[in-house]
Length: 345
Image 1: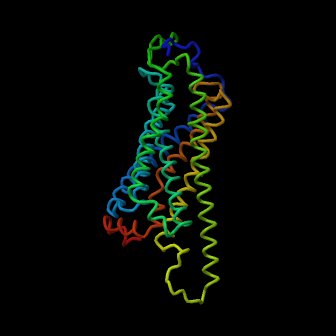
Image 2: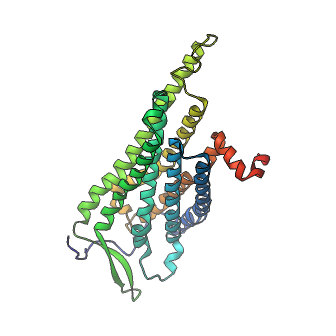
Image 3: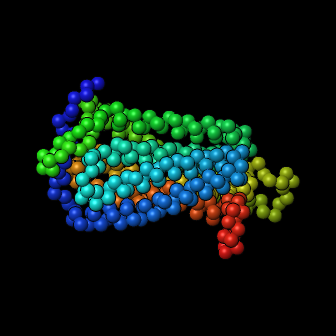
């Protein structure tokens, strides 16, 4: 692989955009530097509480293992997002830094954030699949989806998706760039000769295939769960008044399993709702090159990104509200730690 500097890696000067620069700066500052930062910090604390709560409940249950892994992934996504938010602050342009922030930050922090977002998506999809099995095969799910299976699958998700980070870092390298208008040098990255080929292929996998296969999996599992629960509800109505000597029917779920199914369905819906705008934005960039870093439509990208990034932060932060409102065991465990919370509520 050649290490010669590419002659067309990026443009330092942003061309005239479609959106008023003042509006772009306001949205980037308000949505990302204020709202997303506050929500992200609270979200990190909330996910640490989630990890503590599930640990207290016991990690012998496969659902608790997956939700704990999801909390770990969300913490990683939020941490890197907080750093990216600060570096995307328009005020950085008024500070002379030793690196070209808008390009370097994308490699150093943006991609790790994307890694954890995709890990969260796969873990959510796995948890939804597990609950789908619980609805379809209620008598066999405990045998199929054991604690060890959940541990291995979640661990493999973290490890395998590390491949997401390799292509981007394999086709760039860091070096000094002299800016004549400022009479100074800054650190930035340069593309290697095979950049276009590698990135075209990896973008199809990372920004199209992985996100959309996650969404499709979540939607299919959610639809199956909803249909199956409605079907079982109709069955129960048809046998109302009849005596079922065997107690709980083999086609029915326990109350605990039903609550877990509904809770994870809500988590899946929130994930799809909050992550779809970012996925669509990345898809559009694949077709409209001018929206890439420092392109003619870079201001349009930043405007949309300020909202889609905020939604990503919300997705990684609100799980505690879902668990608290939909899981009796979660509430009881939390009230043991915060007894005053239980009295107030």
